[in-house]
Image (cartoon, helix red, strand yellow):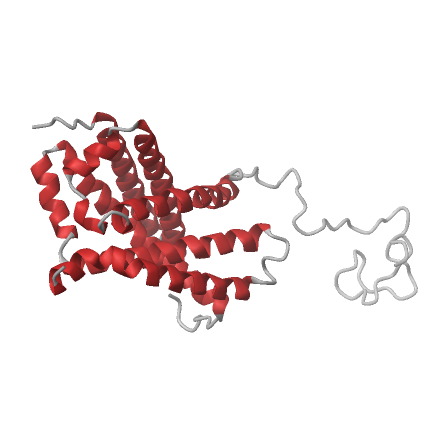
Length: 167
Length: 126
């Protein structure tokens, strides 16, 4: 490409500053061509990024929590539904026996928090994808967040306050 | 869904659909499961009476379905991670999906008796 100062546009019809004038250079040192910003260039007029990199962090969280959950949840299924008679053995006494150990308390607490946050973020994505009306989307997400906070807090409370001698 | 925009993809799209469906189902179960476990704070009887529902044949079968959903979601999730972070992940996504389904079938076959033994013993004697 040649320099802009002496280049005449191929079609100097309507958008030249002085209209169509044959044999006259439209732009020179004293009449420079207008500057065209590259598309999507950040300028003073560009709004400040309003959402930060939350979506990227959420994306990363899904992968990291997913790896941990594979171990926690498959271990949980193995203990509860596969080993030692499957579902037959589950009852208050079985729960009391497992939660007597801090190891399984931490296991279940971590599993509760990671699974709830992983699931809530997944459902947030699903709601964003399919609920097209702004109002519907907003209220579905409020319902989701309320249910999530309630469930996480309830589960946490149950693990921390479990009493094997309750009567 | 807007009319006329149904994308009939292949393995990539259907694994994405299955990942969504299983994810939503597992999340809804998780709500119920935290609530039923919370009954240990009410009384041993309240908890044991509710867990008895989990031991009926129909719900026991649904537990096998839950295992199926979780196993697919877990294995396919690992595949998604490999697609995102492994330099050759996108190239081998199809082979990885068939591997996921292969491992899933083997694990589901292995889980059949252990998970359903309660119902099988009840229906067909010990």
